[in-house]
Length: 132
Image (cartoon, rainbow, N blue to C red; front, side):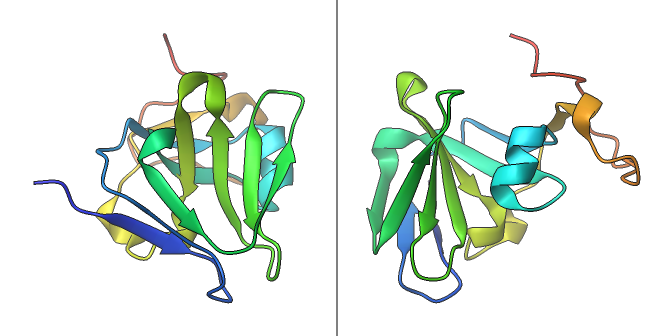
């Protein structure tokens, strides 16, 4: 039985819900994600874009990479990383109501990880994107 995946921003203005099974759960260490999130890596749960209902004052930033990032326009919480061309959206693990329900399966773009981060969780690590 599928369980709802719910989340939202720090101030409570924005929220989202999906009933889809995750496509994948990854931690990205690329510089684009580091800059977009303002943190050393971006942990996210990827679900089908058309499975997510959103509400609130969500702002969007479209990057040259084809990724569109969603955030709360009031408090600035990063909520999403969307790839319309793949019908996929990453839900920021930090914005999930129950983040402990999910465990990443792999680390990607580790060639860009910050040098003080030591990955010893036993998960697969890929210097760039995951294998096709």
